[in-house]
Length: 305
Image (cartoon, rainbow, N blue to C red; front, top):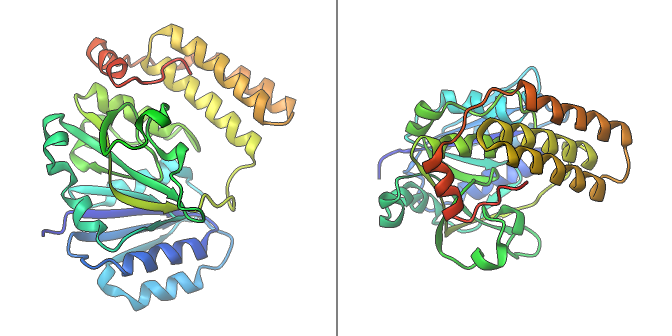
């Protein structure tokens, strides 16, 4: 099999998680589909010595390890690596993911050749994710809000992809552009998803490959800040791509999510309302169009928030 996969990983303050991910990659029985591994250390403040030693000891994994002088966030960090990647397919994993089985790479390299995805002109595919500790399927990593209805489907088309484990055709990015660089954290996948759909591609899910996810809290924003980022960014996405009614309902829906889960932090709450409202006047419109909106409704996308 040709070298078609560029594996992309950004990491911040999780050296042990990154090491275990690379060790699980090392156990893959067939690494011939792997063209390169691109890792961006996002200005971590802890030592990565063990992971760096592993990289030096395994040159056949073709790991390009890059130290950033600043924390670029998710969008800018992934954009940097995606622009560098030479593979036809970009496999993007969080640093707290590990491979569940040793036969994953050939399956990933051939996934777009399946009749289901080829006929649907699929441009990006999310894989099955289970919790590292319990081995139960992770609900938030399934790219559909109707979890019970979709959890056991082997394949399906959907409206968005999950950031922790997905593969996309690099050719798609030539038509859509990269992640939005004004998003430091949260909802960047939705922004890119709408542009992918507008460009005439579909998004898919395939359970033939499984990853384990630790969901480590280290190095991530406190919950209320995370919620605020998601609220503001999802409002921006709705304003950019969807009819105005969905922008309004998204603002309201996510403000309620913040109230339920943030545990106070009223200063951040009111600042976030200001930012979300401002998006209604400042965000440049890029409507997905009637065909894309029909697709979103066909795959039962949750558009209201």
